Length: 386
Image 1 (cartoon, rainbow, N blue to C red):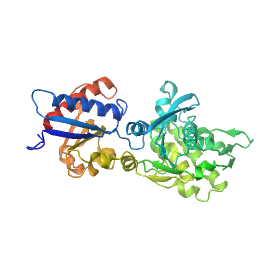
Image 2 (spheres, rainbow, N blue to C red):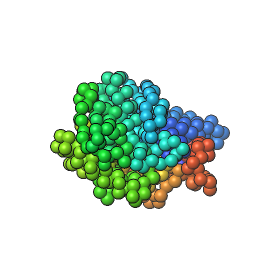
Image 3 (cartoon, rainbow, N blue to C red):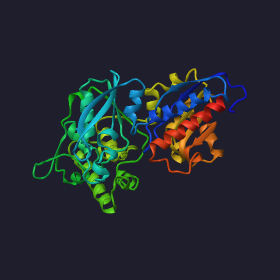
Image 4 (tube, one colour):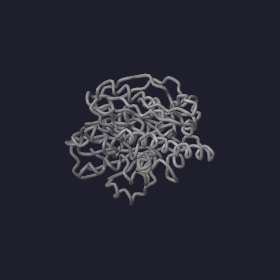
């Protein structure tokens, strides 16, 4: 039991991130809630459980889904996928704020056949989604940058938003890592709507654009880039920065060194060129989805993600949830945990449950098994609360 004076009726806020590769945040929340409710209805327990569901995101993939789950409206639109194929994508909009994400426009999960294209993938589809969001006249657009397939410095996105990149023969370049080194001239024509719309980059990636901690070196291998590809991308991005400076961006080189410029294959850099403001993805989405108000009146908060590890402690979503939960007990649920029990106190966690404690099978790529295990965990959590 978490306490010896548990109330007969418990209100639980279930606020998880996705289990990447397995379940969306909404699916995680649904499975845990089903388990909690089954505990309340069993003969071994008394009382009742009210579940408040708040699927979360931190600016990566799943950001649009999380916004829709919290009350935003989904608006669908067809964009160019990472290799140019049409992709049916969506944004979230509440009449004031639009949420646009990389993962559902030009993300790794949209590569045909799952085949990496480290030199050819483009961010153009993300720019087309931003263009669609602008047509709705939002006051602000939240740019969720996680999960990109490209390392083009945002060249594709900028092309969709009115920039023109041409090679030495005057031919139009459309984006992609291979095209960066071919840029000869840049026309920086931008859409008037951009100047009237607040742009927010929600990301917790702190890498610069270039160098040993830059986008090609750190994230290139995740996108299929070998050593030669990484060298090509690094050279291309260096040339891209120089081309932007020559085109009249006086702070082009300084922005490339900013924390977060290397996020999403350099899309962070392009967003900075457009004047976007960078914020912590975890904290921004907790505010956007009204976490503080939703936790009021709840006795316990249940959060989680696919893996609890050192990155979690560094400020990922479960850590931000725990920090904002005040004196309420906070329970974390994860696919696995690399944090020993003596370190739970660093996040002020009351208890950690993991799928690996409930099975010897690999649930990471098995949604049905993951959901079943989460229902079992939810039932055990419910029994401990009642």
